[in-house]
Length: 109
Image (cartoon, rainbow, N blue to C red):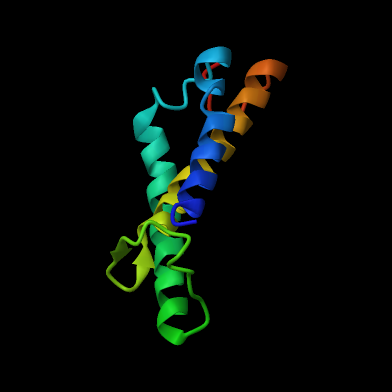
């Protein structure tokens, strides 16, 4: 059970990463745009979790995580969650846009 959290994240990635080459959504190619999207999300939610852990409102079962704990008591798995879930969401969004050929509003005409 040690790597359950990590296994779930790998499953999420497996369910979404294939969209990049199959539908040519180019999420990973636009790395600057991706980083500008992911880094603030990761920072805000990591800070939120660290505060909740410090207050005793939130905890993680060490038997289901990798055991790597970052400063503030935040498990590495949780930080990866804040990377993987938004990435999978973006891939899904861009895949729907690609199939339906819908603009997001920031493309050149």
